[in-house]
Image (cartoon, rainbow, N blue to C red; front, side):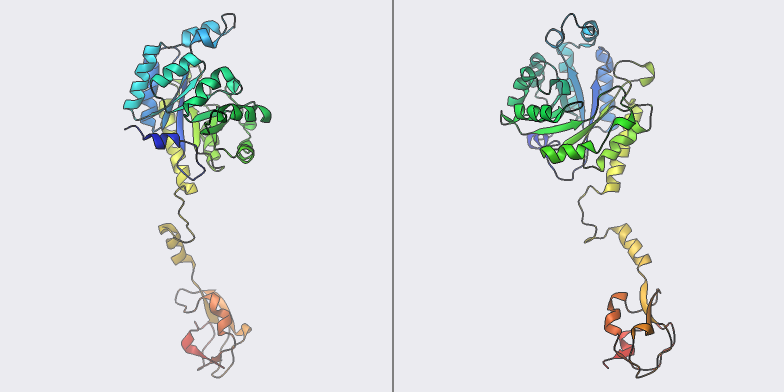
Length: 351
């Protein structure tokens, strides 16, 4: 079932602790073949992703005919009617649709299908030709900032907010294929959030063959990230387009599972565990908190209790908790009690 507009407009645009919003980035892993794209939509849904991200471009508007990549881009471009079918399929799979649109014509196509959010590549961070098409739509915009300077990021934000659109999330991640894990610098997201006071997401491009392709996005959760974007491909071993940082369908399913487990570990439900102890905390408390006050030596009737007469020991059958130790000191012993005796209020009286 499609989410309500209110929920969609809040995707990744709040500062509260909410479950991670996982985007399966298809990019050009379809290799220009509709059937592969269709299989990837199904795989994203079966893996448990929240959204599928499409990269849509019209070669005539997107790339110069003399560019070295022109023929490749032409080969990768799907037809508008094929995109419409993919939009419909994503909806049937209850996936949100995020579109990385690279030209106004692709924005127009996406809007005809009422997509949920847009992704702006860092190369278009300061491209008014594109931003002037996107910003007035008042849809959430995931603004990629990899390889950008502070002044460029600020200008990109300004170009969007001047249209009154404040539904911006900053997507951090260096988009090399793959990005060496030593150059990810996750702490940079903390700087981004503090400087711009906007939600920050993580777009991962580390090696899909490495464990870091799983664990670096999960590590980002510890920094408060709520949007995770991860590439998905049909078969990484074939080394097709956009395969280096992508996960196979079964790997993506495991990735989603790990993210949800990590969130459980972090405690995303906002329960104040120090006011409302959960079952495991209570189990530990009942086992471990057994410290009780006992006598350190034999005490005689009428003796005034001093600090050296008492000690705190682990003792399941004890009576008084350690915090009342100051209240026992100075009291008189009612009757003789032996060493290691679990003293109680019935053993003392006012001196």
